[in-house]
Image 1 (cartoon, rainbow, N blue to C red):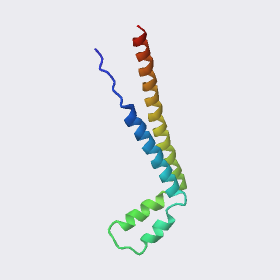
Image 2 (tube, one colour; image 1 turned 135 degrees about the vertical axis):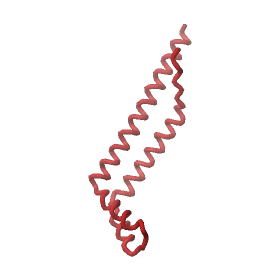
Image 3 (cartoon, helix red, strand yellow; image 1 turned 90 degrees about the vertical axis):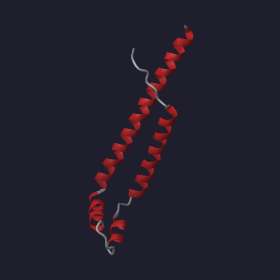
Image 4 (tube, one colour; image 1 turned 90 degrees about the horizontal axis):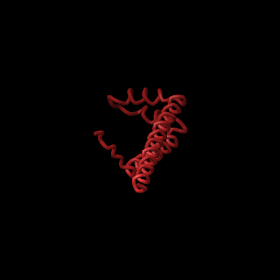
Length: 99
């Protein structure tokens, strides 16, 4: 006998909502690039400052857009899968009740 698939739809919906908020925050925070943050790091002394500066410099507009699109696409797919499972669950429940 096959195992039952158990999906906590509330948890998935919460996760999708949180991801959408994170995407919005990411887009707002990166809208003007990281130029200001890079400049603020100039006077700092740390083992990691150079690496952080290089990382921020690599996040050019094309990369930022690609990251945003990828995260949005992933979130949309998770939401679609959850909605599909919820719909199937509802249809099966209705058939069982009708018998």
